[in-house]
Each structure stands twice: as C-alpha cells, then as structure tokens.
Amino acid sequence: MLPELLKHGGVMMWLLLVTGGVGVAVFVERLLHYHREQINSIEFINGVRNVLRRDNLVEALSICDATPGPVARLVKTAILNRERGRDGVRESLEEAGLLEVPRLEEKLNLLATIAQIAPIMGLLGTVLGFVSVFRVLQTLGVSAPAGYLAGGVWQALVCTGAGLAVSIPAYAGYNYLVSRVNSIVLDMEKASAEILNLLSEPRK
Image (tube, rainbow, N blue to C red; front, side, top):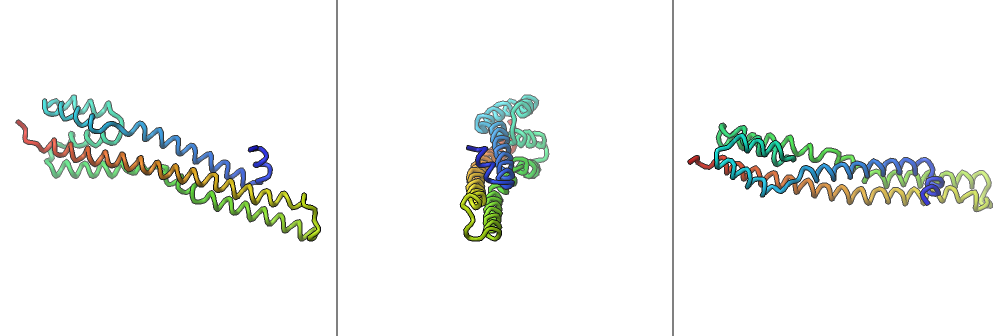
C-alpha cells in the first residue's frame, strides 16, 4: 500500500514521509526523556527530609546526585545554598528553575511546527497534482483519456491525506508531551516549596 501511495504522491509525498519520520523520532525521544526525568517527588522529598533532620548534608547531596531529573537538581541547589537564608535559597531555586524548564521544552517546537506545516505541505502537493491535470487538459483538450488525468488526481488526493495523517498524530503527541512537561514543572514547584520550608525550619 505504502509503495503505491509513494508512487502516486510525487515528491511532496516523500517530503511528508520524512517529516512524519522526524515527528515520530522527536516524540519517542521526548517521551523517554520525560519518563527518566519524572520521579516520585513526594517519596524523594520525604527521604531528603529524614536525612536533613539528622544534619547529614553529605548523604542528602548523595541522594540528589543519585536521583535523575530536575526535581533532584533543584533540591540539591537549595541544599548547597542553605547558608544564604530563605530569600537566598528562593532566589537560587528560581534561577535553577529558569534553566530547567527550557531543557524540558526542548524540541517541542519542532513537533508543533510539523503539526502546523504538514497540512500545508499536503495542500501544496494537491495544487501540484491539479496543475498536472490542467497541463494535460491544455495539451490534449477536454477529450483527454481518463488515464492521463488520473495521475494528477491521485497526487492531489494522496498528498491531502498524507498531510492530515502526519499533522493529526503530531498535534496529539505535542499536546500530550506538553501535559507531561506541565506535570514535571508542577512537581518542581511543589518540591521547591517543600525544600524551602524544610531548610527554613529552626535547627534544634
């Protein structure tokens, strides 16, 4: 089926196929990245809290180093800046958060762009298909055999369908990944508030 579509779709069909492949690669890479980066922040914070209440800073930092993801890096930043006071810790957390969010959003713009331009690419292929139809009509007239016109019609329909077939999953995948980013950012905000309050507690 696919070879036949590629045959009838023309050059634009190949471009759409490459575009779709890039979209799939971006989605899978980001999905695996977010799976590694998102942790059980409540369990992590509880573990760090128990260690810090024993004044074991080295072990707390070791836990942060052994745990992947932005939540652990934020907590480590807060611990390293604990001597700066509550305002200093808050400022360091804000600065670290500004660095972490762009890392999470990396490549999402590419997926959004694919979702937006794929239908336009399909439309271009459709226009090129109808151009070839009218070229045949101009050459052979309205009595041109249907077989001569079929190629352009094929290209028009195939490119339209391919553009939508690439765009719809790309748009759905983009929205799903954005929801994963928002979930991780929410965990970061909760963890920042928890560690800030924990480090602000008076030492016994």
